[in-house]
Length: 267
Image (cartoon, rainbow, N blue to C red; front, side, top):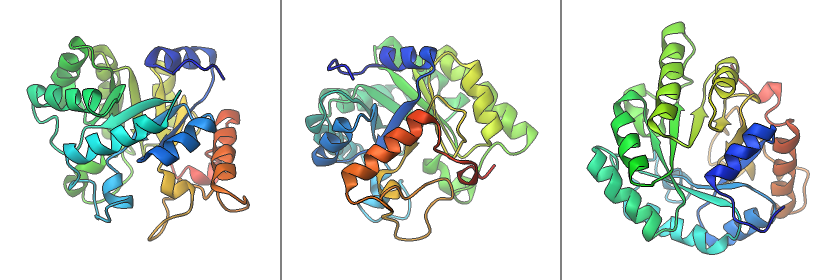
């Protein structure tokens, strides 16, 4: 691996070459150092920290202050991996608010990319951010910040109309300037189609093996689930004698395309 820090252009080149992108959530400097050393390409400071670190039932209580703090911790621990930080609940309710909060994540936290959940309603926000020089990662499919509207953590895009909406929003996000896209809990065939259609990298979680890369919540990878683990995850610590070995196994499995397997792809 090159010693040069990764960027959105690096990931775009990886997609062009057909190299799978490895992403994991990360919330502190110690794990950032460990993941970076293992060759993880992208460290996602996810608002999932509200659930796995803070003990909330959803990501909604997470604030911009929480995100800035954890992003700064991660940034201090990494040397090469790209750092993406989530804009938390209602942090991009207006384009102006999104710009202000993105500035905090980048200036105070050291994020290189900001991620936001939502489709067509956020196109003006994505345009405004990219016009201001902010790289954006869009997030479609299951959107955890909308859990109450969705009625739970449910797979998305399973009927024709819903799939068409996701297809349309994915293209629209790319056209608006998004540099990356996360697809969460959508049918594998749909995710593969979108990955092949878009020129920007598409990172899947619960979306099959046809995406340009994969992301998991770090705690799911390590089997640290308070309840039932997601059907699309794998406990990589099982059968390995250290956290470092588990992370290395995940990196290798994503690179070679053996994760996710068919039984880890619900739809």
